Image (cartoon, rainbow, N blue to C red; front, side, top):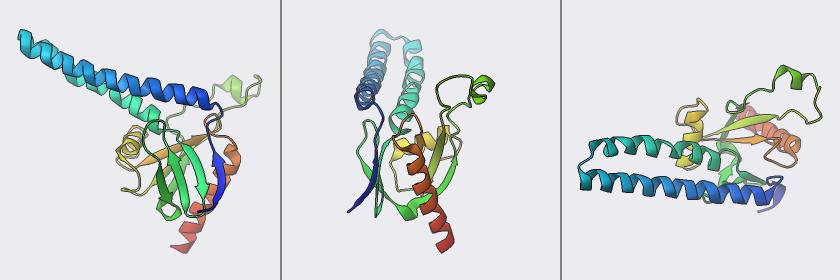
Length: 181
């Protein structure tokens, strides 16, 4: 298992803190839903029970946050993906199916496109993966990105070090897979 390159988040402490806060938010939402259920049944308040689906719906943005831009390590066998709070997974190169524009990242305003500001414009791509290669959290990301239940993860210049090298390597490997098929 030889490592080709490692692409962690540029600010690992911030990433870890966001992961813990997202996890705390998800746990808080689940406890809140249980509390609403108990209060609704105990006091006979049906409106409390009606609030539960809306509260549980707040989990989806947190799931997307935890799985959208995972830490990536490129290896000979494939891509090792480590999301914020979920377990790390190994995805074989053959399981990467396509590379698309990052649909969850808004384009820069026209003023930024003209290089009038000092900060570089954020670039990003989404990588589609065969079903079954990644967990359910990545299917939620795919659904939010408009790819149905196809698992998806993303890379961007703000969330990965050496973004250009990472993008070129993944493009090259996906192109090789399409040529072999």
